[in-house]
Length: 70
Image (tube, rainbow, N blue to C red; front, side, top):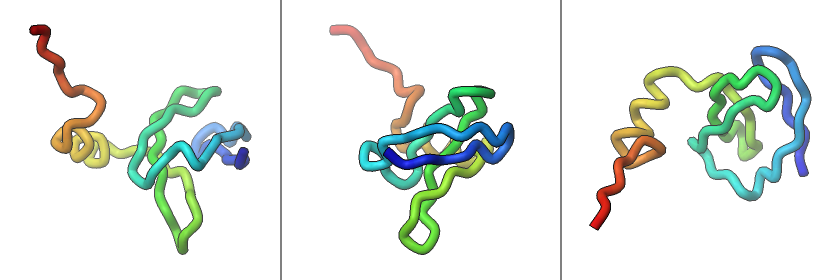
């Protein structure tokens, strides 16, 4: 487990960082702000997800991908 601090509310929380890749989204457990994993000099950092980040994920078939029933 690795400790991270929300860049907005400053809440400290643990993450199993091995389960995440660069560009993955998660929410702060305290303020529910959407965050994105970013690598800086090979180390994971959390930054506030901007609308641009979210739109790029949607275009790549991300979270809002629709599933059709057969």
